[in-house]
Structure formats: structure tokens, C-alpha cells
Length: 257
Ligand SMILES: Nc1ncnc2c1ncn2[C@@H]1O[C@H](COP(=O)(O)OP(=O)(O)OP(=O)(O)O)[C@@H](O)[C@H]1O
Image (cartoon, rainbow, N blue to C red):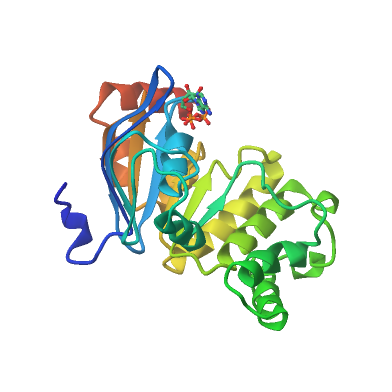
């Protein structure tokens, strides 16, 4: 096991040691070693197809991996793991926001947010509604609670998705390119909500192409190239003086505009 001093005595929320993942003959994740401490905001960057989404999807068991050690908040996901008690626990403790919102189209905004706490956590409707209303207020869309997702803008839908994930009181939030499907004028409102969450101390792992945002919110930036972590460090270091030539050429491409 990797000895990671960033945990400084506190148990990490995520511990990955030599995790390998294949899609058939494609070796998508190669010996991934990553430790995330409570309260840390880690941003994962890299070219399209480098394995960023696959990496975070392994963390909540949406993708299985073939080799290595993966532990989330004390529960271990095993290679080739299918349904297990650990997986169930991890799914309830880890919130995820996807590129495509993935809201239930036939439910109101409020019902989208109350559903999982009632079904999974066994909360009463009153308790779930109270929490949902507070969260919708917090992401600035309390006036949309009775609408259906299709009646909202992309930015509003993504904020509902964030409220829905937070309603489960997650220990860790994963974001998979949460602004990539949004019109440019709506990106800011979603990033603002994420910024706020980071300020409040939520542990977050974020895959994004928003480099300005990454620099601003990340405690640590991880660069992935063809399934390997080739560089990581504080944002100032990775963005201003990248050591690896792959990072240098990626950043010079994406920061050109
Ligand atoms: N379900 C799947 N079956 C087969 N190959 C897959 C599957 N999902 C992803 N891949 C492949 O795995 C590689 C990594 O994909 P992944 O989506 O993790 O990359 P990414 O870095 O998130 O890319 P992007 O920035 O474009 O979203 C790619 O080559 C992709 O085509």
C-alpha cells in the first residue's frame, strides 16, 4: 500500500493502489495510485479518451476493474466485483453528477430530490421534502420545485442533479464533466454551486475541461495520459510549471484559447 503523507493521520476517503482496468483488449487504467483525504478537492484533467471518466466511475462501482486495490470510506471494492454489501454502501455514500444530468424526466424537480432519501435512507416524505427544499434553495432553484426537468434549462437541470446528489448526505462527490453539455452562459451557475460546495469542505473529485475553474478550486490536480497518472500536484505547480512533457503539450493545447 502506498504511504501517502497527505492523509496526515486521517483515514483517506479514497485509496487506490495499482488499479488496472481493461475494456476487452484496451488497457484503460494502468496502475492507478490515488489517495483522497477528507475535504480535499481533486481535479482530474487529460485529453479525450485518456480514462478520466472511467477512473471516477470505478470509484462508485459503475465500472468494474480487473486488478488492484480500491477502498472508499473504509469499504473495499474488489476486482471483478459485482453486487456486494460494500458496493451498496459506497453507492449510498458517494454522490455523482454526470455530464447529461440523468434526472428522472417523469418526476417533478422536488420528487427527483426526495426519491433516494425516502427509498434508500428510509426518510419520511416530510423530512425528505424539508431537506430537498433547503437544497433547492441553496442551488438557487427553489422556485422550480414543481416543474419537470424538461421545463428547465440545462444549467438548472444540472443544479437539480447536484441537489439530488447532496440530499443523500454523501461523504464524497464525483463530478464527470458536469458542464460539458451546457451552453456557455450556463456554465458559470453550475461552477458557482460547485465552488460553494468546495468552500463548505465537501470532498470532491472532479473531471473537467474547465481549466480556470480547476486552478481555482483544486487542492490537487491529477493529469492522466493514456490511462496513466503522469503528473500530479497543486494547481500552481501543474499549470505553471508542468514537469512532464505530456502535461506540457496538453496544457499548451487547451490553454491556447
Ligand atoms: N463501455 C466501454 N466499452 C469500451 N470502451 C470504452 C467504454 N467506455 C470507455 N471506453 C474507452 O475507454 C477509453 C477511456 O474512456 P473515458 O471515457 O474514460 O475517457 P475520458 O478521458 O473520460 O474521455 P472524454 O474526455 O472524451 O470524456 C476510451 O478509449 C474509450 O473509448
